[in-house]
Length: 193
Length: 285
Image 1 (cartoon, each protein chain N blue to C red):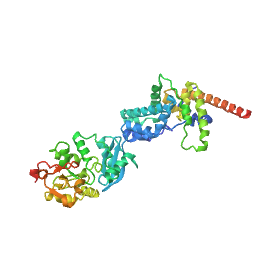
Image 2 (cartoon, rainbow over the protein chains, first blue to last red):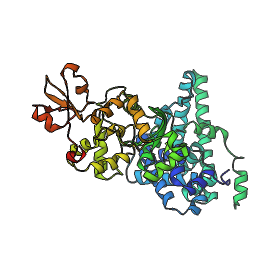
Image 3 (cartoon, chains in turn blue, cyan):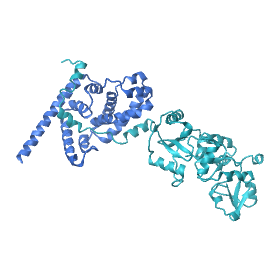
């Protein structure tokens, strides 16, 4: 998928100003998502995402066209967002919990009936993710919440492919175990009542 | 365990835990509305343009954060591509076609092009790229009411540079925002309507007539030596197209040749249109 030559990169290489709005439209969800994973606060994530995209624009203007043509935008942008978010949260504790916030946001295609159900599901997964050890949490979140491929993930966090894969696998296994335990507990409660 | 990149890609999703993947995907959130606008604004790529009907044919109207920046007649410039290129060579940044402008811009377009809604509302225009004098000329022209005209000499006098009539003419001719900034309402002191950057004298006449200006009458008066209209009841004199002049009833209407003559007969200048003589009046007359 990511090996295909990126049309957008070709256009950015030819003219950053002409194609940049499309980069924003295509990738703003990813940039915001990555910022949200790290800052865990919607307002902060919005500021971070804005800064990250402005920084990306500056870099694209500076880079020679040949370099832009060969870029993989998703991991590159994710990495800029990750660094910007880490700088933002460095040395201070965040009190708001994004994953609870995330659980309250309904997507527009939700019908009113399944909305409550969806919210319960989100809240549960947000809770499970929060309980993961720090070491696995980001890897799992970037892989499955933000939908980065392993190759993109490795490039984003700047670590070898094998090691991010193993982090994701272990994190996923832990999550799955926690999920199964929760389902069993839920089943037991329902049987008891 | 050694994993080659090829093997890694191949095995990438075979061992994926579908329950976890699907569950975590519910946490995915879209970027908030406004993020993209904020970014494009910060990097200076927020300019858009629309194609709208104008008084003498369709117009392209471009605007950015600071207001309307560039207007061209679609028929004159050609197609969208030509307009985008012209914008870029003027401002050094791109502009994007959109179907509907923001409400504030739409209001300005309605007011300036069609006289809908009050004309007292402030008109946001971007003229930063122009030299100070040209900018002040165009901001002054913006004050000329719909359906009225003022001579180049009036603009020069209003700016405190009564002799800079030709410089005013040059600035008006280079107006990047015709129709919105009504350079068609600036005419020659001798009564001829003068040239027009957005399509020549014929176009200028057509735009003025679309606003209800009686161009023939305005041209006839100076030929008879008449520059101002006075009222013998108020003893105030105006430019003939000033709305105060048009209110004077026929029995009280007095035709005046110059401000000297007007003052000598006990008239004072209208405070709304502030009429002035052209410089070098003696040479012209």
